[in-house]
Image 1: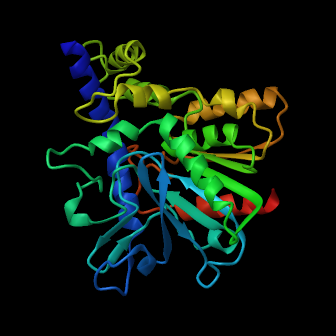
Image 2: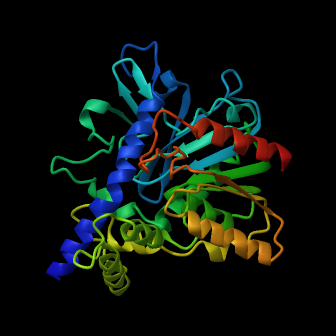
Length: 351
């Protein structure tokens, strides 16, 4: 049991460091100057804010529309963001950090964009109360208990579907099209939504691992410079996965994700993706740890003569589409997320 706890902690910290560092850079790059002296409400930043009752929870979600066209009927572009307990709106004085990893303005021409907050995490927060990676934690330095208990694929998917069904009853929402997109952890959520909700017309699967999260963790630890005959980071990850499978309903955690969370997000989405008949766009960086598994998905679909999939590989870029330098470090001076969003929009126009 002691070995299991140490292994679990080491792997979680190891796996999350690069993700957290990259996330901080993305949010910093997306900062823009606001005319407001102090944060007042989501509306001050151009969003519609909804509080949705799901079971016993109050769920915050935001709608981003083109200014002046908030009530014009348009289809939904439902974006499932990645991991970590991060508020949707982060501000620092007059500075506002991007809610989406991309500028949503171009997509808002055709769509009303939807993004849902993390459970038991404030909708808005001043950066000074957050950790350096913009995550929200309690006084003990841990994610809120309510977040940990709900940070599950089996929670996010039905919650999101309930929100979609509610929104599609509004007179400013067109039901002729429904786009669901997800990046990283969000790609898994988006895929399960598409497999369960038949009104979804298009899926954008971005930066995911179609064979499951644990394979990305193993891939990363196999490549770690400290993975030697004595340290065996890769082998420790396999042992960690063995523990997870044996305790797949375990929700206890002092840091990082619970076993149940990792187990659920390690379910292979390739099974669901291959069954989809709607148009699907798969985008990924070729230097991402999940890249070989997206190539595998691509090869399988070619073998099956599936023609409803489009793949866009961003050569030489990492998980968040930053190109790598000669020493294999992300070059944060080159921000590609807006290009990725533009490619999404162009694909939707063709489909």
